[in-house]
Length: 267
Image (tube, rainbow, N blue to C red; front, side, top):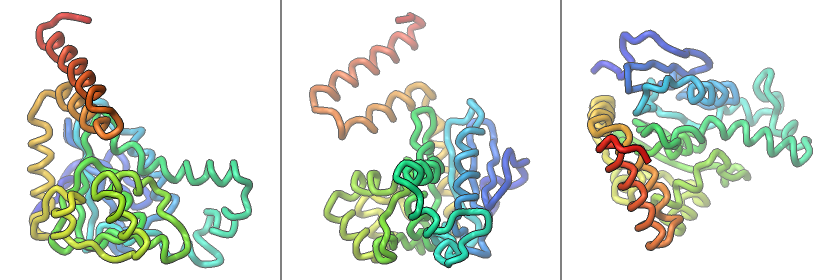
């Protein structure tokens, strides 16, 4: 099966991340299968750069990974005393003052924040292990298609740290507080059947059909007019934070904009 970015010239290809663009569809591929697409600050900087690099024509972004694992989490070298060359070690980070440490973590989080912006729909195609930072990267996307061999786990707590790469908010939104807390503090694995049953994944398919399933979902998202998708995404994203009456009002405002736009009448 051909990958989503086959034969396309990369817009960006660095530090284990490749971006290709085919008109309205962008594909972001993690490209270090030898290390199970382990994550590092360099990879996070590359992912943040992808978000800044996306052409305005892009409506859907598919996130995928080469190899048997989507991402096995943090590069284990980050846990060693010497760390990764050119990057601060955990001890270095701990010695920074509050403002500097906060700014460093915020910079790391930038790799995980842009996937939910209003003008795109992001789809994670996840196979094999999606551990820790890998789980949180999949959670950063709007939608998730998983292979039947997927294994999600949040192992940060078992290492004495917390999930800090933006994963806790979407996890609670998807599966509820009790299950999210249990997943995070026990570090247990969540497999494909449970992921679909709990809403963590939209659908599960055999591993050799994962790219095709992601492509089909991307095509379905691209079918409606872009502005209608943008307005609908904003309505759905904000529904949990709004009261029922506020959501009704938001629907009315969005529909008024759509009707006037379709009629060619400016506000």
